[in-house]
Amino acid sequence: MTNSRYDPLYVAFVYYFNVERDYFECHEVMEALWLEEGRDPLYQGLLQVAVGLHHHRNGNIDGGVKLLTAAIAKLDNREPLVLGINLAQLLADTKEHLAKLERHHEKAFPFRDLDISIVDPDLAQLVASFRPDADHGE
Image 1: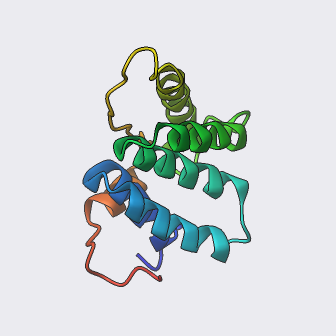
Image 2 (image 1 turned 120 degrees about the vertical axis):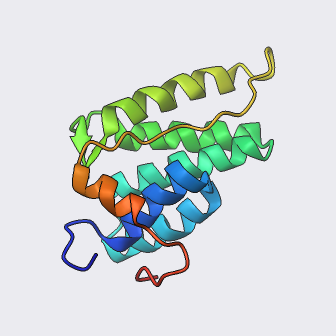
């Protein structure tokens, strides 16, 4: 993975998001990358999507709304395809999830996972071959 254009922490993030559905671990690896890369708002927005889903899954509806709202603000008006993913699709799915979550107190909205659509075959291969127990630059 060292010759890849994708940071190992980013690959780990996508793996934990799409495969393990471990949004807390997504937060851990993306926060490390976000700090390492100079606090890029794009990375922070991706991190906030994961944390918002983590809050929703754990019954913290207000926390989920807050984090998903912040994520959308950081991810809106960006290139549709970035970092090997379809960011536009993730953004649309996040907006739909948030809209339902905001009405949760009126009509219960059960938790559901979101997917990050990978558009770069190289990234897809890196995610498929990812090993959680390996050192990923953390």
